[in-house]
Length: 489
Ligand SMILES: Cc1cc2nc3c(=O)[nH]c(=O)nc-3n(C[C@H](O)[C@H](O)[C@H](O)COP(=O)(O)OP(=O)(O)OC[C@H]3O[C@@H](n4cnc5c(N)ncnc54)[C@H](O)[C@@H]3O)c2cc1C
Image (tube, protein in one colour):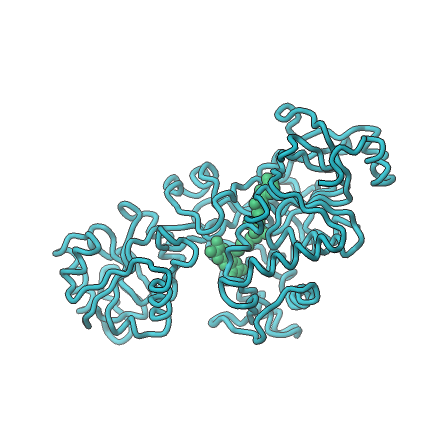
């Protein structure tokens, strides 16, 4: 980091008039007692915390406006990019720039979140997503040439090049390169620990811990883009579910909600953390939690717990399934299917992915053999399949216990298969720092904390219970860019 060790006088000189006031009064940390005074400090216009999609969008926007920007990242450079680097790389957006398409986008988001998501934020995403994706392209981020769809939602999608689950690390690197090209500084292996505040109650920088010890990164504004809290078992157990400590983490296990905690120490309100409705959960292979996700097969299969029994309507989809698995004995299940189901497009794609990744798929000529392979008692399992098969009429099995509303297929044609074991894993967390549509951080009573902005997974409590695939990255991009713009104004 080139600026470490700047004297107080020269540092204040470099950030101009606002710094004079800050220097005269002297910023203090939100938790002054916990970290010692730093030996070194540096001055910037904007400090961004995090190198995921939200942080990169904020920093890129700010350097583009001529600001002197530092990005702090607690991971080392080879692990940069947070959960954004693990993402499939799908971004959702309105189908075109018409009011009608934006309205459909907004309505579908509101419906998906059962009316409990952040509709004000969805309106901002609808208004900006297409222009911001074009801006990413201008900044060297590459996408697959054609737009996709995501039925039943009335939105369009684009996927980062060269394709699903392959593009994000490369495209985030392109963004980091562009930030540095435009004069930004990215400091890896440096954990933001506390916000600095001046005596007017405005945020005035970040106290961070890195290889050089404690350093103050002073600035006129700070953007928190430190991601979610899927890796923080204390937060999950306290707010989501007492069982949530058993959840696997599908992305980075160092997504520990640091941004939420730092913001809260500085007076910010938090919203949307309560219950499993604040989590996106999927039942995944415990060895490969990111890509070992049979989400397309799941609604067609029978989900069988350790007692050999069904426990839910599998047609409700993979997130409802992931949450239900959390309450099953041992929190481990098998998704059982037969040769007919295996030949369907979604299940066959998931089966091929598991084969490619070398993940376990149990295969047997008889249901008795399958029961033994997946370690469930044979008789209850056979009775479960028998009674389910007898209840299948057309597409549903409404007399089965529990009933299945649609996608009901008899399990009758050998071979018999099971994705097993599957355990619940968190994809992303929905609770976050309270912000307004300008990405300004708010206290619980709605007051603005001056100088503090937040964006991405850990801000805005955008979603509730579930989300439309692709909307998390779009949220990071749009709100990150807004945070970067307003942090420089
Ligand atoms: C397997 C998987 C697939 C997904 N696929 C998609 C998809 O296709 N489309 C979609 O929309 N969403 C997807 N998601 C969700 C999406 O990836 C995330 O919600 C999004 O990337 C979060 O971005 P972010 O910038 O907010 O945080 P992150 O990308 O997590 O970045 C936060 C960064 O902040 C750093 N950080 C944290 N604390 C500190 C600190 N104290 N000091 C310094 N640095 C800190 C972290 O190390 C990290 O690098 C997926 C998630 C997973 C796990």
